[in-house]
Figure 1 (cartoon, rainbow over the protein chains, first blue to last red):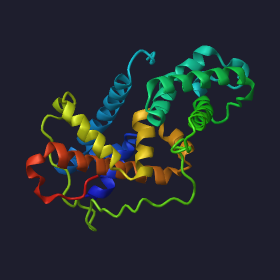
Figure 2: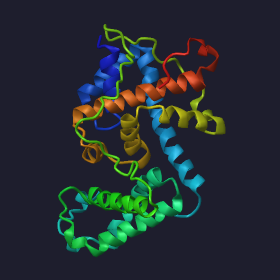
Figure 3: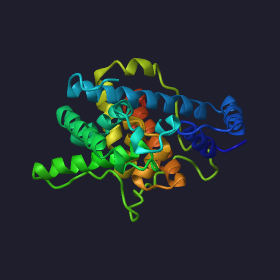
Length: 69
Length: 207
């Protein structure tokens, strides 16, 4: 079994680049058996969502129209 | 992105193309200036300057990178006008940076988690709570400065990984390491301070 250290690094990279099929397979195999890494994956996705939402907060806190999109 | 549009020469720079980058530029400016009107002005000036000097755009680095370059100058101008030191206007960092002294190890030598994630109860609900955002902000600002900047460029400003590397002068390999550590830290901090408050006793490292 791959180590959690390696798997989480891959999971993290998966948020920044497209992983290869092999890499995704490795991850999936591992997280089937490892609940911590499964949580890590879920939580880093959540962090991404949170970061986006936070940016929206910043913008609306700052006020108004400004952004077209 | 621009390259997809096949833009090669400046003559093809259109207002619409420039405007596409407005949201990213605005977020970039907002993070630095912390004021939406100032940020808006800086972006406005940037787009205007870009429009006027479109012929200087060589298309090599990508339109967005070029625009951010201009924006940085506008932000620096602002600091200068307001008579302040140019504090953080340069979001990049040079060669010789402190490696952030990031000794915290999240894993044991075997590669297994040292501690490690627990399941979080209803994270979606957290997003709706004001208090959560205060915690989020704390955790984010607790990241070592360099790490925080990389994280924000990627996740808040919304640059692509390769753009962040260009912005900061990081190699790919360093980028992966830094982003990964940022996520590990943020995750842990959020867990300790928000999702697992009851089990907080052990007051470990916070992000």
